[in-house]
Image (tube, rainbow, N blue to C red):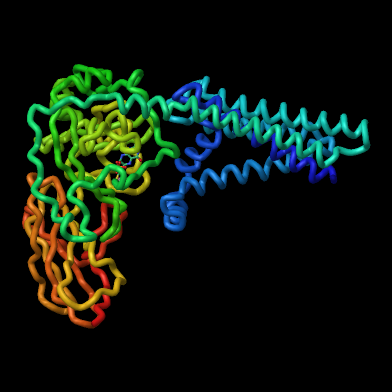
Length: 504
Ligand SMILES: Nc1nc2c(c(=O)[nH]1)N[C@H]1C(S)=C(S)[C@@H](COP(=O)(O)O)O[C@H]1N2
Ligand SMILES: [Mo]
């Protein structure tokens, strides 16, 4: 086998072993990350938003899989380079290349949200393993050259197999030791506190009768997710605390047990993402359980000149909203979602929920700190990236069924969907088929103006092609406007419309 090819294989094997041990070591401490994850997080932090948008458009939910694969690919490409240098006897070049990779990944690790000097451990072990394996393979090569002139294919295969097995068991062991398992077990064992008063059960869900209509409560497993973090933080309640600090006279700090021992209440609230396109899926409704934010902030005694509440996530994400939003609208620190302990993906152990505000300015998941501050001093994560500082959820409506582009048979067809305008509530939904008149739709019963309302209307469909549009009016009497406005900087506007073909 040529020295070049051998070198490539040595380099790639060495780096894969290095990555595997890095992953393994990263599981030893909850504030350490595997080198690939740290690098990925820095790419997410610094990539221009146009690139991010493009990647999300192409890869959708797999954007992070794409990023991680890309990083591994680049690392392997570099490893082929240093492997060849090593095999060609230019050992210094090989070591310098590895040192440069370790430096890059070390810097990336130091910028992780909870980083300290020990956060370098996964990277250092990774780099050390890479060099060790490279030298070991190089030694094997020399041995076999002395014995029979060149390294045989069989020996190479054996070395690769051993390394592969070691790497796989290292990452398997990593998984077994993983924080994730511990936290998942912890979560299951938690008994949620009971609210002073349970909310009424909502009336029978019209979605039971209308196929395709969103259920009133979005099941947790179907609830949309928006995270800037590359991997979902797994926070153990054992060492989790929530502090309320900054421009306050009485800083507070709670353990999880202390937080959930406080009075809790239930809230039916629809949350939405500012990036939701007209008719899009980034909106969901849940029955949240939590501690009233107004009470906690009052106890902390904000100074008279503070005007912003900033939530900090364990992963470094931040979101700020006006202190004046605490006007009795039931903002909370949520610990439960739809009768379950808050799912890890949705912010376990705790997150903020503020009715009527888009998630990016309010709904901090994996919450660890609340800071009272001023808008002219601090900005949340998305603000410097071009999104509005204040962002109430706009009045919107969506047609769930029929699906756009579908072919349906003539007869009575249900047109149905959801409309939302937390905290104003929905007062009317109208539907227009083709150039026909606007018809007023039936509305589902709700117990709060903070949730979406389901709507539906029967349509006597005859053969032909149709465009169906919907518009909602909110509790303030605003009618959703037709004019399309793009999601950036503070949410999309316009009517959702669909196209259907009715067949005889
Ligand atoms: N830590 C953290 N919290 C976060 C975010 C995030 O990226 N990281 N995204 C926010 C945004 S943009 C939205 S729309 C909501 C989404 O909440 P969900 O993922 O539970 O649906 O969470 C908010 N809280
Ligand atoms: Mo969002």
